[in-house]
Amino acid sequence: MQDRYAGDVGDFLKLSLLKTLAGDDLRLGINWYLNNGGPEGDGRHTTYLKPGNRIGQSLRLVDEELYLSLQSFAEKDADRSVRLLEQQSTLRSSSIFFADSIDDRKKWHQTALRRLEATELVFLDPDNGLTMSDAVPNPRKHVLPSELRDYVTCGKTVVLYHHADRSCPVDVQVLQRLESVRDST
Image 1 (cartoon, rainbow, N blue to C red):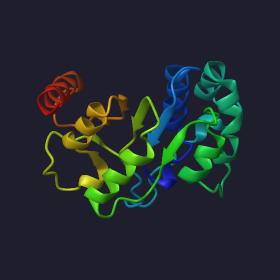
Image 2 (image 1 turned 90 degrees about the vertical axis):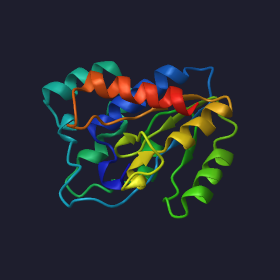
Image 3 (image 1 turned 60 degrees about the vertical axis):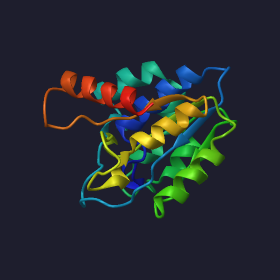
Image 4 (image 1 turned 180 degrees about the horizontal axis):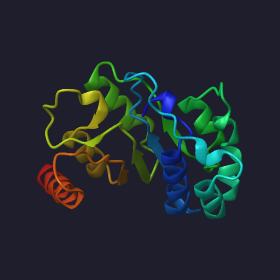
């Protein structure tokens, strides 16, 4: 996740889904996998919040409270940040967020596990998703299989964002990642 993506249409969909999954019963934890690097000009998908936008009007019917709360993200000079997204997410106040930047990966991961310890449902939101190996060229953009295993071992229900790439069809990627998860847990 990057600050410049905060409030985009993907966040609307993620937050609405998480509200539904957590309901009134599960305490939600979010690890943003904060990574504020990447190409300039990226992350402009907030037009769904503009008046009269057809997709936005459909999404508003899904979760009007969230749709209205995220309106400031559509402003031209919006302060788009994960911290603001947390404040305007309309998630229950008992939700726990972890938005530390990834520096020392092992220390960062251990801190995340401790911070999200009191949660039952954990959402992991890296830029690109689950990598199939702990040895990946840009690990800041991925959840490592060992990290996923640690959350599962702690008894967490895990929801993981994964962005499909162009390496092969999406259904093949899903099967590959599921196999990777099975092999790592």
